[in-house]
Length: 105
Image 1 (cartoon, rainbow, N blue to C red):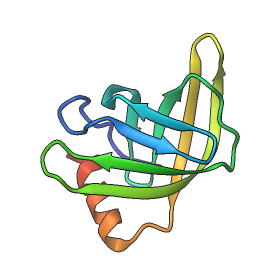
Image 2 (image 1 turned 180 degrees about the vertical axis):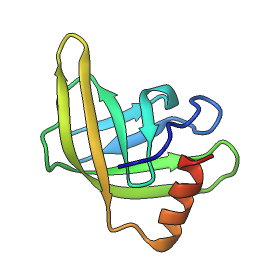
Image 3 (image 1 turned 90 degrees about the horizontal axis):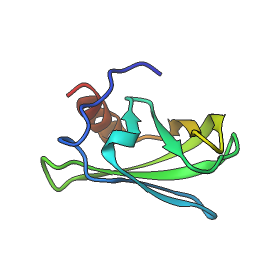
C-alpha cells in the first residue's frame, strides 16, 4: 500500500470497523487511511485473513464510503496494542476514486 497519511481530526468522523465478533469505533488519529487499505491500532489482536467492513465518513460532506477488506498483518502486544494492516477488496470504481481523493487530501 502506498499513500500519504491523512491529517487527523479535520477530515473524518470516527471510523467504524466490524466483523462478526468485533466492532471498533476508532478516532481519526488512530487510523491511517490509504488508497488501497487502512492501518489502525487495536487493543485486541485480529487474526490474519479476517474479513472486516470499514465505514468512513468525511466531515466535509455527508457521503460515506463502505469498504470490505481483509486483515493482512497484525503486530504488537497486549501492553502497547496491536497495529493492524488491512487491504480493501472488491472496491467499486466510485469507492476507489473517493478513497484516493481522501487519502491524498
